[in-house]
Length: 291
View 1 (cartoon, rainbow, N blue to C red):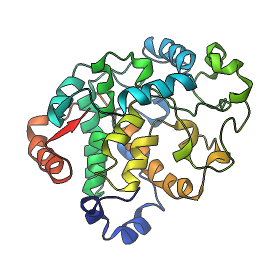
View 2 (cartoon, rainbow, N blue to C red):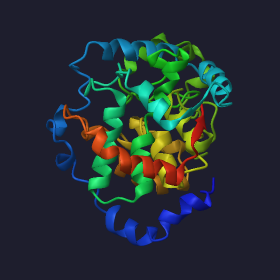
View 3 (cartoon, one colour):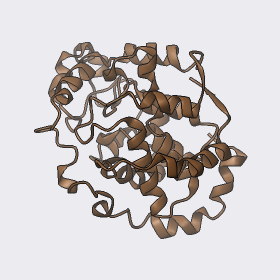
View 4 (cartoon, rainbow, N blue to C red):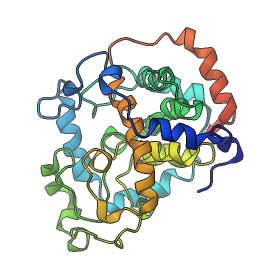
């Protein structure tokens, strides 16, 4: 996918910026102001008892057929047309049951992420990526259970990695009994590229598809794969990657600390931040988006 002309503008000096930043990822400790980095993503003893049950349901019901059904249902974007700020208002009602690190509403998390990116001097398209990265959780507005919207993502149609959170629950998934889906490659060709791989359904794919005409490729990879921890954190699924995926991986890894470690109990002051983000949204996005 080629970025639009609007998305291209902030990337005029990309080579210089990339040389400076992609060799050194942000220091997680400088972002994690609420607690130490070791305390994040604690799935052995999560602070919230919804987390383990969430992943049991997620791993049981995220089948290949389920993913195809949801793609057909939602990627037509014919459910609703909303201004961005109306969608954010909805997110104020949502607490992510899969997240062991925060019980703040989603808009606060998005602002924490985007503000951390902005403080470190990244280009405004990446700040917008931080603001938008979880907007796809509006799928809950349409009646989807959280296990079909949030949480870590993983490929379907091939064998599961044991580095996925709570891999033991995959034994409940009907696809685990399908020999076609339980080889290393499954239905895919070697090094086919992640763009040809079907991921478990959720807000990542949904917001990527919604934003694909408005953000540069680097930002789109951040959106599409920010929950694919088995890849960008654990180094799994190398056999499915192509060269483009490998080139984009540093950008996903650059984004991840801001998503993960910016979560803290201190809420951003929306009244002070609102003018900046209204201007940023107007620069890149239409007045209303189709959901």
